[in-house]
Image (cartoon, rainbow, N blue to C red; front, side, top):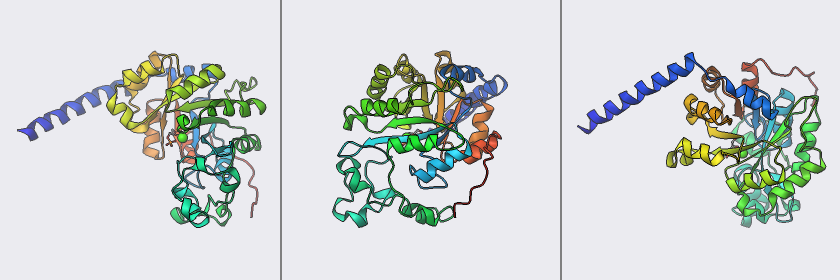
Length: 322
Ligand code: G3P
Ligand code: CA
């Protein structure tokens, strides 16, 4: 009996899916482009998640330089603060996964990044782990790569023939009171809060899973676009409508897991003037499906395949870096 009920539910679900899927395939929602362009964001936006992190160690200078030189629209970075107040680019709370902390500070290997000073973090190698976990793309030049600061990320963005924007995420901002002001001060100093008028380009976008952090950015820099990030357990616990309501007046867009970026969800967001950036889109089939539905953006570890798909890869002269 239970089995029969499950089959009926699955069939109903598939019917519904094919109805909606077919509807949006025939009738794709094309409003994303206009919504993005009004914000000064290129369409579709290609965003390098932690840099070109499939081909170089995530969040390092090498990953960001690679992404910049491929021609991405934005470099994505997670921001945290060291014990002595430097804003650095790093995703995890602890250092174990992507550094040799166990070797350098064996007794502190499980400690949070926030308990290390900048000078201590500079002693660590954030590149060699990648050579072991991705031998195919590993390289001798990744050995010994250091952590980078927000100022260094800005320098990288500005240092090539193509200048991508920055999409900056506050990681666990509740642990770093006042981090938003510090980030804004650095960006202000470097001239990264103003739109690039010539390109009509929003150079900096802020995003976070924490509404309080976006609220603070809204107060500090109302002109910069903001995205509310949503993860799978957030969408399973609350409805899409709930998150649209939460984003109303707070954010200009939503960042959603790829598998839940349904076209009918996106259309509802568009009704409200919000854009949607799915993450993390690393497979060609995902790009193809999202492109069918005219996705506004692609947050990806593999910007090379996304740019190639859209025939937007930059053809920069090859520099022999040894
Ligand atoms: O791209 C969205 C994403 O950055 C949020 O997840 O864990 O990769 O920072 P995470
Ligand atoms: Ca992130």
